[in-house]
Amino acid sequence: MENKLRILIADDEEIIAKIMEDKLRKEEIFEIIGIAKDKEEEVEMIENLTPHIVLTDIMKGRRDRAGLDIIKKYNIIDSKIKFIVISGLDIRMEIVKENIKNIVRIFPKPINLNQLILELKKVHREIYPVEIVNINNSIQCLKKKPYLQRFIENLLKKM
Image 1 (cartoon, rainbow, N blue to C red):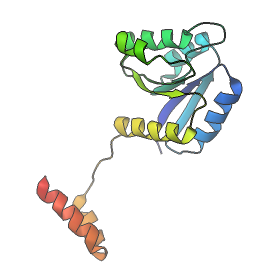
Image 2: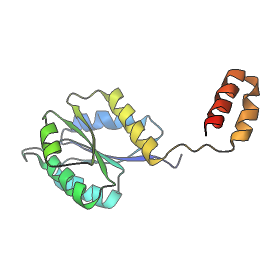
Image 3: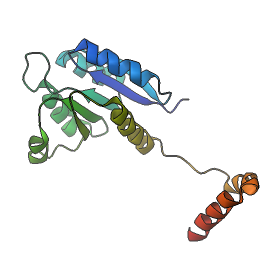
Image 4: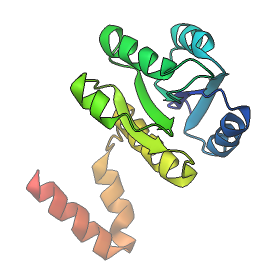
């Protein structure tokens, strides 16, 4: 499949990054393009690997709020790159106050990986919307399933 969501994981806690990587690699619509362990690696990988979305922590080692600095930077210079924040810090008020729009969602630590996958699938659908192709052939194939045929015919009438 060529329409994969390009994901960069940025977390200084290696075990958390590895768990996320292992879980996300099981989904064929995701491509993990890198794992950044600090602010410098994260910025370098964003610049060189062009992710669709970055999964980032706010705290990077001892650097207070380094992840938020990166998000603010790309909020200004590249609005196409989106971020999902995974953090123990509550930054919701700061996001509203500073009008940061490139954050898709904030997840608290410990993260629920199933919820993360659902959110990433939403992002994938926004980037690669499903196209309806050759609807007439589809209707012909559905004649064996009349309830689906009626549903599609009703949708077509509404268009």
